[in-house]
Length: 104
Picture 1 (cartoon, rainbow, N blue to C red):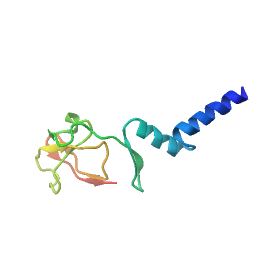
Picture 2 (picture 1 turned 45 degrees about the vertical axis):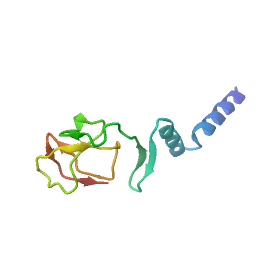
Picture 3 (picture 1 turned 180 degrees about the vertical axis):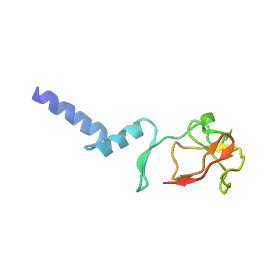
């Protein structure tokens, strides 16, 4: 029994690192993502296949529909689908209208 537990633990350490953060990073890479540590946030970012496609709402994209840089909030706009599942600063488009931007 003890040798089975030791083998299982050794396999987990070898496959994904020794702690939870390494495990998450390993899982991220295995799933095709890229690990990002932005200081205030860390996690796995996945690349989308519809980046730059025109959109008027995020439900039309794999991730977010983003307004062009500098668009005043409340402006009717056609945005573009984001290239990744997360960005440090973004201004989403909801129902064809640019929302307030947010940075994390």
